[in-house]
Amino acid sequence: MRGIVFLYIFFIPILLVGQSKSAKEFGFRHIVFGYKGDTVDILIKSKKGEEGLPKPLFFFIQGSLPHPLIITENGGNYGVFPFDTDSLEQRYHLVIVGKPFTPMIVDKMKLKNFQFVDSTTNRFSKEYIKRNYLGYYVDRDIKVLEFLLKQKWVKKNKLVVSTHSEGSTIGAKLSVLYPKVTHLIYSGGNPFGRYINIILQNRFEELSDTTINTEDAYNQWKNIVREPQQIDNSGGDTHKGTFGFSIPPINYLRKLKIPVLVSYGTMDYCSPFNDYMRLEFIQKGKRNFTFKPYIGLEHNYFPKDKMGVVNHNEFYWNKVSSDWLKWLD
Image (cartoon, rainbow, N blue to C red; front, side):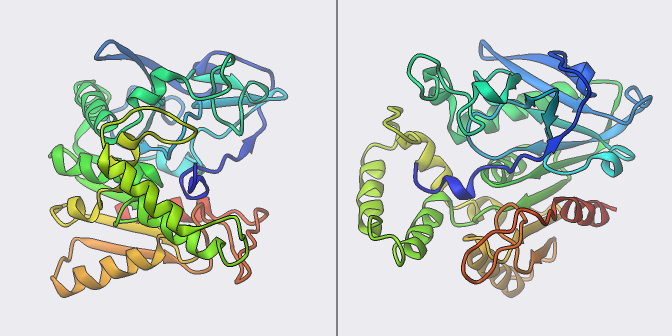
Protein backbone atom coordinates (compact mmCIF):
# COMPACT_ATOMS: atom_id res chain seq x y z
CA MET A 1 0.00 0.00 0.00
CA ARG A 2 1.34 3.42 -0.94
CA GLY A 3 1.55 5.87 1.92
CA ILE A 4 2.09 3.46 4.79
CA VAL A 5 5.05 5.56 5.92
CA PHE A 6 2.75 8.25 7.30
CA LEU A 7 0.14 5.96 8.81
CA TYR A 8 1.88 3.76 11.31
CA ILE A 9 2.83 4.42 14.94
CA PHE A 10 6.49 3.90 15.68
CA PHE A 11 7.14 1.26 18.34
CA ILE A 12 9.68 1.82 21.11
CA PRO A 13 11.16 -1.24 22.81
CA ILE A 14 10.74 -1.49 26.59
CA LEU A 15 12.53 -4.17 28.60
CA LEU A 16 10.40 -6.38 30.81
CA VAL A 17 11.73 -9.24 32.89
CA GLY A 18 10.12 -12.50 31.85
CA GLN A 19 7.58 -13.31 29.16
CA SER A 20 3.88 -13.09 29.95
CA LYS A 21 0.63 -13.55 28.13
CA SER A 22 -1.42 -11.68 30.69
CA ALA A 23 -2.11 -7.98 30.20
CA LYS A 24 -2.04 -7.60 33.99
CA GLU A 25 1.62 -8.61 34.12
CA PHE A 26 2.38 -5.82 31.64
CA GLY A 27 0.71 -3.30 33.94
CA PHE A 28 -2.69 -3.11 32.26
CA ARG A 29 -6.27 -3.91 33.08
CA HIS A 30 -7.88 -5.85 30.27
CA ILE A 31 -11.57 -5.64 29.42
CA VAL A 32 -13.12 -7.85 26.75
CA PHE A 33 -15.99 -5.91 25.20
CA GLY A 34 -18.63 -7.15 22.77
CA TYR A 35 -19.52 -5.06 19.73
CA LYS A 36 -21.87 -6.36 17.02
CA GLY A 37 -20.73 -9.90 17.70
CA ASP A 38 -17.03 -8.95 17.64
CA THR A 39 -14.63 -9.30 20.54
CA VAL A 40 -12.95 -5.99 21.35
CA ASP A 41 -9.83 -5.78 23.54
CA ILE A 42 -9.60 -2.72 25.80
CA LEU A 43 -6.44 -1.98 27.78
CA ILE A 44 -6.43 0.49 30.67
CA LYS A 45 -3.27 1.98 32.16
CA SER A 46 -3.65 3.52 35.60
CA LYS A 47 -1.28 4.67 38.30
CA LYS A 48 -0.46 1.66 40.46
CA GLY A 49 -2.67 1.59 43.52
CA GLU A 50 -5.13 4.11 42.04
CA GLU A 51 -6.97 1.83 39.63
CA GLY A 52 -10.24 2.39 41.49
CA LEU A 53 -9.73 6.10 42.10
CA PRO A 54 -12.16 8.15 39.97
CA LYS A 55 -10.26 9.98 37.23
CA PRO A 56 -11.16 11.21 33.74
CA LEU A 57 -10.36 9.07 30.70
CA PHE A 58 -7.49 9.76 28.30
CA PHE A 59 -8.74 7.77 25.30
CA PHE A 60 -5.91 7.22 22.81
CA ILE A 61 -6.79 6.22 19.24
CA GLN A 62 -3.83 4.61 17.50
CA GLY A 63 -2.80 4.75 13.86
CA SER A 64 -3.43 2.32 11.03
CA LEU A 65 -2.73 -1.34 10.30
CA PRO A 66 -3.34 -4.48 12.43
CA HIS A 67 -0.72 -3.97 15.12
CA PRO A 68 -1.30 -6.06 18.28
CA LEU A 69 -1.56 -3.92 21.39
CA ILE A 70 1.27 -5.80 23.13
CA ILE A 71 4.20 -7.03 21.03
CA THR A 72 6.77 -9.14 22.86
CA GLU A 73 10.40 -9.87 22.00
CA ASN A 74 13.25 -11.55 23.89
CA GLY A 75 11.57 -11.31 27.28
CA GLY A 76 10.52 -7.71 26.79
CA ASN A 77 7.77 -5.83 25.02
CA TYR A 78 7.26 -2.84 22.77
CA GLY A 79 5.44 0.13 24.26
CA VAL A 80 1.66 -0.02 23.97
CA PHE A 81 1.61 3.78 23.90
CA PRO A 82 4.31 5.61 21.89
CA PHE A 83 5.05 7.86 24.90
CA ASP A 84 5.82 7.44 28.59
CA THR A 85 2.55 7.39 30.52
CA ASP A 86 3.73 8.17 34.08
CA SER A 87 2.75 11.86 34.11
CA LEU A 88 -0.57 11.27 32.41
CA GLU A 89 -1.40 8.51 34.91
CA GLN A 90 -1.30 11.07 37.72
CA ARG A 91 -4.47 12.68 36.33
CA TYR A 92 -6.08 10.16 33.99
CA HIS A 93 -6.89 6.54 33.31
CA LEU A 94 -5.36 5.84 29.89
CA VAL A 95 -7.36 3.70 27.47
CA ILE A 96 -6.44 2.10 24.15
CA VAL A 97 -8.55 -0.27 22.01
CA GLY A 98 -7.22 -3.08 19.83
CA LYS A 99 -7.65 -3.50 16.10
CA PRO A 100 -10.46 -5.81 14.93
CA PHE A 101 -9.60 -9.50 14.69
CA THR A 102 -6.02 -8.81 15.80
CA PRO A 103 -4.65 -10.76 18.80
CA MET A 104 -3.88 -8.60 21.81
CA ILE A 105 -0.47 -10.13 22.64
CA VAL A 106 1.82 -11.49 19.91
CA ASP A 107 5.55 -12.18 19.71
CA LYS A 108 7.34 -10.06 17.12
CA MET A 109 8.64 -13.19 15.36
CA LYS A 110 5.07 -14.04 14.38
CA LEU A 111 4.43 -10.63 12.81
CA LYS A 112 5.22 -9.14 9.42
CA ASN A 113 6.63 -5.62 9.84
CA PHE A 114 4.88 -5.46 13.23
CA GLN A 115 1.58 -6.34 11.55
CA PHE A 116 -0.57 -9.40 12.19
CA VAL A 117 -1.16 -11.40 9.01
CA ASP A 118 -2.94 -14.65 8.19
CA SER A 119 -0.39 -17.46 8.47
CA THR A 120 -1.78 -19.24 5.41
CA THR A 121 -2.12 -16.28 3.03
CA ASN A 122 0.58 -14.00 4.52
CA ARG A 123 -1.90 -11.13 4.20
CA PHE A 124 -4.27 -9.30 6.52
CA SER A 125 -7.16 -11.46 7.66
CA LYS A 126 -10.45 -11.13 5.80
CA GLU A 127 -12.27 -10.34 9.03
CA TYR A 128 -9.93 -7.43 9.77
CA ILE A 129 -10.23 -6.14 6.19
CA LYS A 130 -14.05 -6.11 6.33
CA ARG A 131 -13.96 -3.91 9.46
CA ASN A 132 -11.06 -1.64 8.60
CA TYR A 133 -13.02 1.49 7.69
CA LEU A 134 -13.86 4.78 9.35
CA GLY A 135 -17.48 4.12 10.26
CA TYR A 136 -16.67 0.88 12.07
CA TYR A 137 -14.01 2.47 14.27
CA VAL A 138 -16.07 5.56 15.11
CA ASP A 139 -19.21 3.63 16.08
CA ARG A 140 -17.23 0.96 17.97
CA ASP A 141 -15.26 3.53 19.96
CA ILE A 142 -18.42 5.44 20.89
CA LYS A 143 -19.92 2.21 22.25
CA VAL A 144 -16.71 1.55 24.21
CA LEU A 145 -16.79 5.06 25.69
CA GLU A 146 -20.44 4.71 26.64
CA PHE A 147 -19.56 1.53 28.52
CA LEU A 148 -16.51 2.98 30.26
CA LEU A 149 -18.28 6.16 31.36
CA LYS A 150 -20.66 3.99 33.38
CA GLN A 151 -17.81 2.65 35.53
CA LYS A 152 -17.38 3.97 39.08
CA TRP A 153 -13.65 4.62 38.58
CA VAL A 154 -14.30 7.06 35.72
CA LYS A 155 -14.99 10.75 36.29
CA LYS A 156 -17.65 12.06 33.95
CA ASN A 157 -16.73 15.76 33.89
CA LYS A 158 -13.86 15.43 31.40
CA LEU A 159 -13.20 13.14 28.45
CA VAL A 160 -10.00 13.53 26.47
CA VAL A 161 -9.78 11.92 23.04
CA SER A 162 -6.14 11.77 21.96
CA THR A 163 -5.10 10.54 18.54
CA HIS A 164 -2.28 10.01 16.11
CA SER A 165 -2.09 9.48 12.35
CA GLU A 166 -5.12 7.54 11.06
CA GLY A 167 -6.56 7.81 14.55
CA SER A 168 -6.81 11.59 14.12
CA THR A 169 -9.56 11.17 11.53
CA ILE A 170 -11.41 8.72 13.77
CA GLY A 171 -11.10 11.10 16.72
CA ALA A 172 -12.27 14.12 14.71
CA LYS A 173 -15.46 12.44 13.52
CA LEU A 174 -16.07 10.78 16.89
CA SER A 175 -15.82 14.15 18.64
CA VAL A 176 -18.51 15.59 16.37
CA LEU A 177 -20.87 12.67 16.95
CA TYR A 178 -20.26 12.09 20.66
CA PRO A 179 -21.02 15.20 22.75
CA LYS A 180 -19.38 13.87 25.93
CA VAL A 181 -15.91 14.47 24.46
CA THR A 182 -14.55 17.62 26.14
CA HIS A 183 -11.03 17.82 24.60
CA LEU A 184 -9.55 16.55 21.33
CA ILE A 185 -5.84 16.11 20.56
CA TYR A 186 -5.48 15.88 16.77
CA SER A 187 -1.95 14.59 16.17
CA GLY A 188 -0.17 13.73 12.91
CA GLY A 189 -3.33 14.04 10.86
CA ASN A 190 -4.01 15.56 7.48
CA PRO A 191 -7.17 17.70 7.65
CA PHE A 192 -7.65 17.15 3.92
CA GLY A 193 -7.66 13.37 4.16
CA ARG A 194 -5.54 10.35 3.44
CA TYR A 195 -5.34 10.44 -0.33
CA ILE A 196 -3.89 13.92 -0.66
CA ASN A 197 -1.10 12.72 1.62
CA ILE A 198 -0.47 9.81 -0.73
CA ILE A 199 -0.35 12.19 -3.71
CA LEU A 200 2.07 14.53 -1.95
CA GLN A 201 4.33 11.66 -0.88
CA ASN A 202 4.41 10.43 -4.47
CA ARG A 203 5.34 13.89 -5.71
CA PHE A 204 8.34 14.01 -3.41
CA GLU A 205 9.50 10.47 -4.13
CA GLU A 206 9.08 10.51 -7.91
CA LEU A 207 11.97 12.97 -8.11
CA SER A 208 14.39 10.24 -7.02
CA ASP A 209 12.46 7.05 -7.85
CA THR A 210 11.60 6.62 -11.51
CA THR A 211 9.26 3.71 -10.73
CA ILE A 212 6.79 6.10 -9.07
CA ASN A 213 4.24 7.81 -11.28
CA THR A 214 1.76 10.07 -9.50
CA GLU A 215 -0.66 9.68 -12.39
CA ASP A 216 -1.08 6.06 -11.32
CA ALA A 217 -2.29 7.27 -7.93
CA TYR A 218 -4.85 9.55 -9.59
CA ASN A 219 -6.09 6.66 -11.71
CA GLN A 220 -6.41 4.53 -8.59
CA TRP A 221 -8.45 7.29 -6.95
CA LYS A 222 -10.82 7.23 -9.93
CA ASN A 223 -11.32 3.51 -9.30
CA ILE A 224 -11.93 4.11 -5.59
CA VAL A 225 -14.51 6.82 -6.27
CA ARG A 226 -16.21 4.58 -8.83
CA GLU A 227 -16.63 1.79 -6.26
CA PRO A 228 -16.33 3.40 -2.81
CA GLN A 229 -17.95 0.46 -0.96
CA GLN A 230 -15.67 -2.24 -2.38
CA ILE A 231 -13.96 -4.31 0.35
CA ASP A 232 -11.67 -6.49 -1.77
CA ASN A 233 -8.13 -6.36 -0.41
CA SER A 234 -5.84 -6.60 -3.41
CA GLY A 235 -2.54 -5.79 -1.80
CA GLY A 236 -3.52 -2.69 0.16
CA ASP A 237 -6.40 -0.90 1.82
CA THR A 238 -9.92 -1.52 0.50
CA HIS A 239 -11.76 1.14 -1.46
CA LYS A 240 -14.17 1.52 1.44
CA GLY A 241 -11.36 2.10 3.91
CA THR A 242 -9.43 4.54 1.71
CA PHE A 243 -12.52 6.48 0.64
CA GLY A 244 -13.76 7.04 4.18
CA PHE A 245 -10.39 8.17 5.49
CA SER A 246 -9.93 10.46 2.47
CA ILE A 247 -13.02 12.55 3.19
CA PRO A 248 -11.36 15.72 4.54
CA PRO A 249 -11.48 15.64 8.38
CA ILE A 250 -11.47 19.45 8.29
CA ASN A 251 -15.20 19.03 7.62
CA TYR A 252 -15.54 17.54 11.11
CA LEU A 253 -13.05 19.87 12.78
CA ARG A 254 -14.86 22.98 11.52
CA LYS A 255 -17.94 21.91 13.52
CA LEU A 256 -16.17 21.47 16.85
CA LYS A 257 -16.56 23.99 19.65
CA ILE A 258 -14.59 22.05 22.28
CA PRO A 259 -10.87 22.78 22.87
CA VAL A 260 -8.75 21.14 20.15
CA LEU A 261 -4.95 20.80 20.06
CA VAL A 262 -3.45 20.26 16.60
CA SER A 263 -0.02 18.66 16.94
CA TYR A 264 2.29 17.82 14.02
CA GLY A 265 5.87 17.76 12.79
CA THR A 266 6.78 20.35 10.16
CA MET A 267 8.65 17.71 8.12
CA ASP A 268 5.51 15.58 7.90
CA TYR A 269 3.67 15.48 4.57
CA CYS A 270 0.56 16.73 6.38
CA SER A 271 2.27 19.93 7.60
CA PRO A 272 1.18 22.34 4.83
CA PHE A 273 -2.45 21.29 5.24
CA ASN A 274 -2.39 21.88 9.00
CA ASP A 275 -0.81 25.27 8.32
CA TYR A 276 -3.63 26.05 5.88
CA MET A 277 -6.22 24.99 8.47
CA ARG A 278 -4.58 27.31 10.97
CA LEU A 279 -4.84 30.24 8.54
CA GLU A 280 -8.50 29.49 7.86
CA PHE A 281 -9.42 29.17 11.53
CA ILE A 282 -7.66 32.45 12.37
CA GLN A 283 -9.64 34.11 9.59
CA LYS A 284 -12.90 32.62 10.90
CA GLY A 285 -12.11 33.50 14.51
CA LYS A 286 -12.15 29.91 15.80
CA ARG A 287 -10.48 30.45 19.16
CA ASN A 288 -10.97 26.90 20.46
CA PHE A 289 -8.05 25.58 18.37
CA THR A 290 -4.41 25.54 19.51
CA PHE A 291 -1.69 24.64 17.01
CA LYS A 292 1.60 23.07 18.08
CA PRO A 293 4.05 22.48 15.20
CA TYR A 294 7.33 20.68 15.95
CA ILE A 295 10.05 22.18 13.79
CA GLY A 296 12.14 19.69 11.82
CA LEU A 297 10.27 16.59 13.03
CA GLU A 298 8.53 14.03 10.81
CA HIS A 299 5.28 12.13 11.16
CA ASN A 300 6.28 10.19 14.28
CA TYR A 301 8.18 13.09 15.85
CA PHE A 302 11.68 12.05 14.85
CA PRO A 303 14.10 14.61 13.35
CA LYS A 304 14.24 14.66 9.56
CA ASP A 305 16.85 16.61 7.62
CA LYS A 306 16.45 18.43 4.30
CA MET A 307 17.62 15.34 2.43
CA GLY A 308 14.78 13.33 3.93
CA VAL A 309 16.94 11.27 6.30
CA VAL A 310 15.19 10.42 9.58
CA ASN A 311 17.21 10.24 12.79
CA HIS A 312 15.62 7.52 14.92
CA ASN A 313 18.18 8.02 17.67
CA GLU A 314 16.44 11.18 18.88
CA PHE A 315 13.07 10.53 20.43
CA TYR A 316 10.59 13.39 20.90
CA TRP A 317 7.35 11.56 21.72
CA ASN A 318 7.75 12.21 25.46
CA LYS A 319 8.22 15.93 24.78
CA VAL A 320 5.07 15.88 22.67
CA SER A 321 2.97 14.08 25.29
CA SER A 322 4.33 16.44 27.96
CA ASP A 323 3.08 19.36 25.86
CA TRP A 324 -0.29 17.66 25.53
CA LEU A 325 -0.54 17.42 29.31
CA LYS A 326 0.40 21.09 29.76
CA TRP A 327 -2.29 22.07 27.27
CA LEU A 328 -4.87 19.95 29.08
CA ASP A 329 -3.96 21.57 32.40
